[in-house]
Structures are given as C-alpha cells and as structure tokens.
Image 1: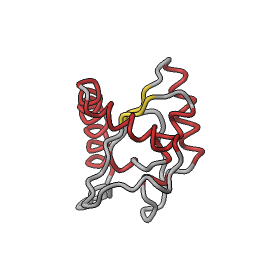
Image 2: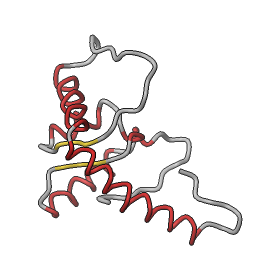
Image 3: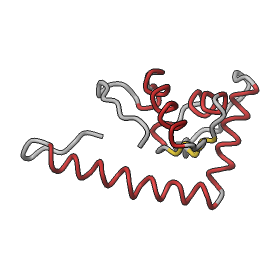
Image 4: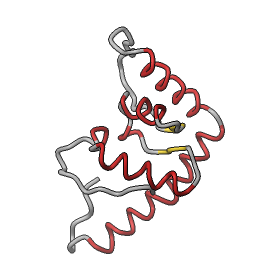
Amino acid sequence: MLSATVQDGTEPDSQIPCDAVIDAQENLQRTGSDEVAADKDYHANVQPAGCSELGQRTYIPEPSSPHQRKWTDKCDEVVRAVTNNRRRMKRTKGRQLQKLRSERVERSFAHVCETTAPAGRGCEA
C-alpha cells in the first residue's frame, strides 16, 4: 500500500484527489519501483494516463461495462495509456500482482474493519 486516504463515502475511488496520488508517487519512488497495482474501483482513464506521464506502469483492471469503449473524444496519450494497461493486465505478471494485492491489502483491510468497527457494523468499502 503506497498511500491511504479517507474520503467522503459519496466520492468514487476513481476520483481520488491529486494530493493522494502525489503522496503515493513519492512513496513509490522511495521503494525504487515503477509499477502500480490497484483494484478496478480505481480505474478511470486519467489514472493510467497520469501514471504513464510519471513514468509508471499501471496494473489496474477495467470495470465491466455492457458498452464498447468510445475513444473519439480521448487524446492519444490517454488511449495509449489505457490500452497499454489493458495489455499488461492480461499478462501473467498482471495477474500475479493482482493476486498479491488481494492477499496483502484486501486481507489487511478486512482485518482492520473487523477489529476497529463498532459492534455489529463492518467497514463500508
């Protein structure tokens, strides 16, 4: 986990404030890595594009959609970043990173919710 922020429950994860992204970027640089894995709730066209501009490779699954993507209103950098992210997610490494993320981050989050939530209430995710 590179950065943790608490935000209003009505805000979608894909609209994380830039300060949180910059904080995560600084922490990522400290680790010496250039790869970012997140769950599909964080996927928005701007996320892979922004990380690509910073020299990072994203591994963020795209949420399911009943509609085919329209690229006519997107700039070339965004299209390239999203399609590169999509390609990386299909590779073995992408699946391995998602598995590690699930094992380490999601389980830890569930544990925190179980041990800190008021009796009878779980964390809202």
